[in-house]
Image 1 (cartoon, rainbow, N blue to C red):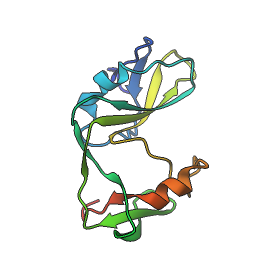
Image 2 (image 1 turned 90 degrees about the vertical axis):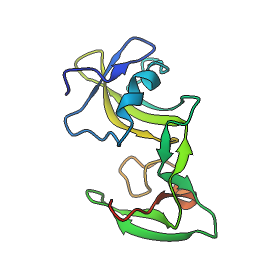
Image 3 (image 1 turned 180 degrees about the vertical axis):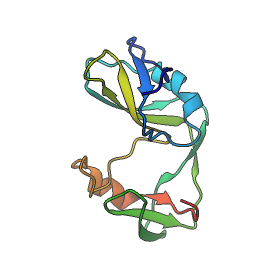
Image 4 (image 1 turned 30 degrees about the vertical axis):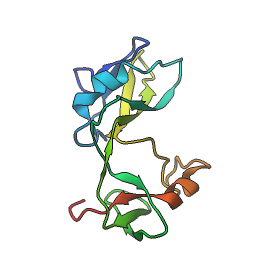
Amino acid sequence: MSDEPLGQLASGEYVFDRPRSHMHSGVAPLLPEALAWIESRDRNVIIEEIDLGRIVGKKHCIETTENDRIIFDQRPGRKGLTRFVLDREPEDCSSVSVILKLDDHADIYICLSAYIGTRSEPEPWDAYATPESESFWTNHALVWERLQ
């Protein structure tokens, strides 16, 4: 765990990064502002999308249409195939999404993931897939970029 907190929740708990961070590029400077909007409400796991009211970056998970060209590819460290859309660009976004977990031994939260973008569902093959995962990933995809 990092020594310095990433920020503090509106309810007062501090949030720290984990050793094998899953924080996406460009989101770290936005976290103190985004975290300050979240109330923990005694949740063990917090999954939140925070709209910061201005364009803060580009989202790479976008809604697709029947006209899009779709491919599936294996991302490094993943156990299943990911849906990608070709010939599209990341879209402007005003939201930051975070997944936080309450630490078992302290009144702090650990950041499991943070990214610029709207909240997405785990991929259907993921151990944390939800009943909404399949539908979500039928209508969304990551923007294909050569250097992944």
